[in-house]
Amino acid sequence: MVARQLIFIFLISTSAIAAPEYKWEKIEGCTLVESEWNDGDSFTVRIPSDTDKIFRLYFVDTPEDGKDTRFPKRIADQAGYFGMTAETVVKLGDRAAEFTAEKLSKKPFTVFTLWQDALGASKKQRFYAYIITDEGPLCELLVSSGLARIYGKRIQLPEGMDSRAYLQKLGGLEAKAKAGKLGGWDNER
Image (tube, rainbow, N blue to C red; front, side, top):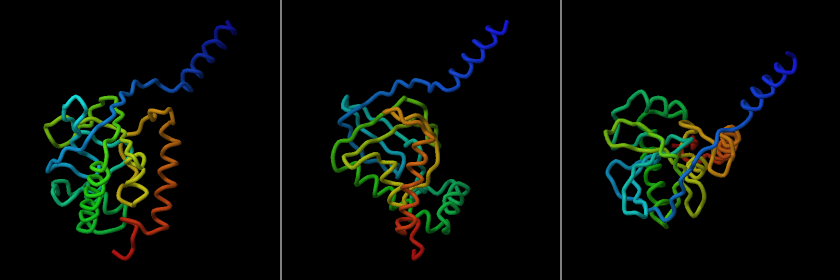
């Protein structure tokens, strides 16, 4: 009886430790598709099969831009995160959208996705993604530039890093952006 209990406890403890396996799809050679609804963290991408898909970034949330102010509570939350007014955070959202468009328009980039539904206000389907540009992961570039808050869906990264470790990494990048008064952390706005 004791042996059974020990085996049961062992099985439960090892299953709690084991990270789930994700079947990431890696899509190289992707390009940005211009769309009036692209913003800093959601955008239309042409994948090499000439199919357009809308992707939403894991781990980050950029402020709403001036094209879409239908969500005053979300804008207020974003403004509170950066310590600014709603009007100012929308301008930061415009900067984030421009930044993302610039980073994704330079060269083809890589999309990692699990094809998880990212929901949203649009009737068009969008999927969560982890995007790698020639300069590095897009979510890291946004956070280190002070253009995104650490927020949103979290998941084990394609290379195996768990979300807690990645959140710590993003937190370090955000701390540097704050210290450098970059983007939304610029007190002189």
